Length: 453
Image (spheres, one colour):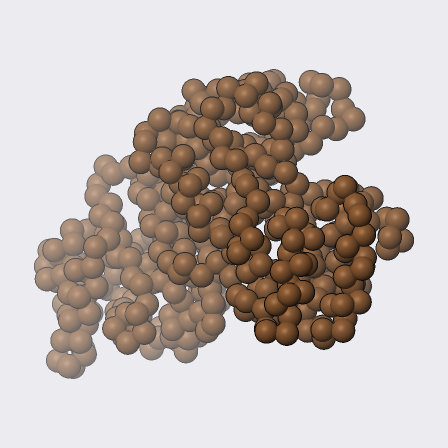
């Protein structure tokens, strides 16, 4: 999925276009594809077009992260379009707004130099304008049309071009920052996984992620999915579990749910097994299957790499190493517990909002991290429960943590969860399940004895 607009950026994309040329054709398909990628596109419905550009449009341009300018035969026939372009150029120069020019059945050189049919339309529009206005339009046309973009000529594959443009937009929206917030150590995991995935290879590839509960497998999968999905034509992240249906009905349900998400078709019908193989065999896909505990699921949804198009990547997240072996997944990333230093840093991020403990908390923080077994989920729960607490409150909790227990994960969850307020308890349940593939019912059962859920 693409990054949402931040700060004053309300829109991911502002499209500038000639309605009579592309609104009901090229633009409608592009908007659909951008919407499928959860990219927020400005819509101009209800804005009456005239010679003077509407204030709403000026505001929308300034609040967009990317402007997609679709130059077509009649683009220069519109004073409205040319004035939009002036504002887009201003944002491009002054605030670093990204611009993607698309040349729809016009040659880029005709736009840059205002020649050919495009030039004739431009000259007609300039007849009653001052020389200053004309020169201003000529300058921005030349500069914007000189930016690297996409050229859709007669006979081009429009569908492929739309996919390419939407991927380009998505890639540009993904933040280049290395700040992963509270997810300490995630960079090393992603680097190791990217090496295994080997995205430059054209072969389809399956990779496993294995590790104990709460160690951060699903967090790694989520970050990978967010980071890589824009490079694939189709993608899905899902958790699929056994149901009370008969075996055939359950498998059909699995296929329907996966295909519905990956193809963006909510009303898809699956009548026979094997639809995944048939429908995705020529598509470059990214599929992340989380919390897998059933070999039949793998056989049904990702039976072989040959089911998918060149360059496809399948990531299977599980606690069961034998399950990966049985499905002949040889590329396996084993998620290990963090080092003592990383574990302490994780705890401190949640407890103090910084990488190390204040001097008076050093000894306590080291012991808490150790008692949590250096388990990432436990560290986050305990850290959150101790946030903005005084040293006395930390000391108060220590006897419960020190009690002998063979299951450090269960102990940590119970103690940490018990100290959270009701609102934070609900938030924790959501976070635990979202990032770690841990079902709400399992967490509630685990905590039931101590907190009376």
